[in-house]
Image (cartoon, rainbow, N blue to C red):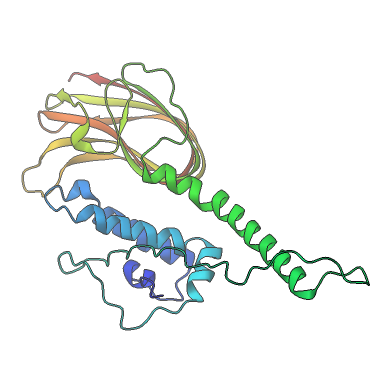
Length: 277
């Protein structure tokens, strides 16, 4: 079975270290995020391929399994998007496992031993069962949470200009927050707040970070003069702490608070308020 060339998708060599994989992933995820390309419907598909490649190669066990199936050097991506597009992921084939070799259980022979073929069958079923349990525990649960856009844990009661977010599994996702502390996966879906030029948005935060990092900031609605993207400002956090961000609004516009999580495990509490000049 031909597999996608995940190394080619991330633009790294097959001997790339975990730090090189992480750096390449962060750069591509920021470059191809759909919110930075609202007029290109293929942006989300490209980012999905990048996420899948990193999910496999960043896990030591999955990378070893992937490397045992050599990718053909002639692999050609089926989806193109501009000059630096990444290949789309081919559909996962259905299982082809067959019960053709299964036989009913035999009775023990005169020495009290079961036939050798029966012992091998039982051992094979035990091994497959353990692998399935490991697969479900380490991969399917977090993946389903990301795929369907569910929060990993319940948020606190809704309070105006307040959010409490808890991630119990490694999370990589961009979340936008409205004035009532409700999270959205797309910038266009969020009810915005109108700010005037010169106003200051004070965001007080408390972070408890067990892994990964988180970006806390504010994003505008319209493109800025001389730029191809809306105004966005904030900071990355990789350690637990408590402080406040002060972001001055450059032009009158509709703005929204947002979080960018990269393999984040932990919690964050936000409170924000508008201060007039």
